[in-house]
Amino acid sequence: MITLTKINDKRLNLEVTGLLSPEQMEYALADFEAKTVGMEGGVILYQLHDFEMPSAATLAVKLADLPSWLKLMTRVKKVALIADKKWIRKMAELEGLFLPSIAIKSFEPNKGPEAEAWLAG
Image 1 (cartoon, helix red, strand yellow):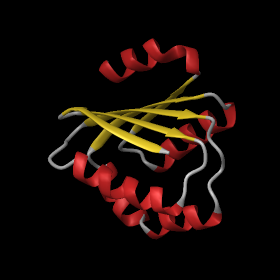
Image 2: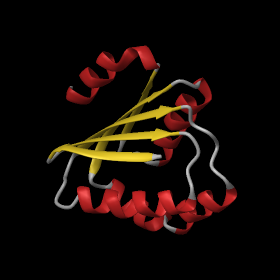
Image 3: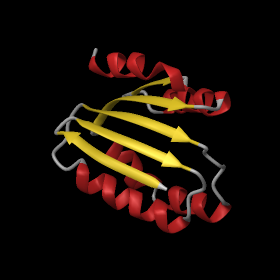
Image 4: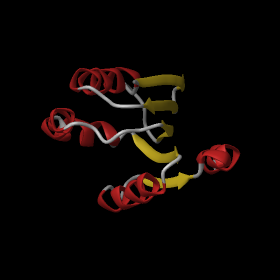
């Protein structure tokens, strides 16, 4: 399940739980695009709970829409990821190496206040 909440003109909260379907991934792209219209220098608090590796079909949707995702991510300058699995936190920071215009920092679940402070700084 994906929940994207627009907090204000520069802030989104994204929460992903469990296993994602291809339909959810398609919806997430459209929802992200709609909620970031006019956004510049935005920040995202991204929380993953009980995340399961997506199926090949779900990954195919994301890869097929990769140009759109990359274009939309130019609206964002910082992402704070809170995840319960260490490998996910490491992968997010590696992903940040491929998106040099976006600062990505990962946090353990009990570090929510630190993630919020980092986004605000």
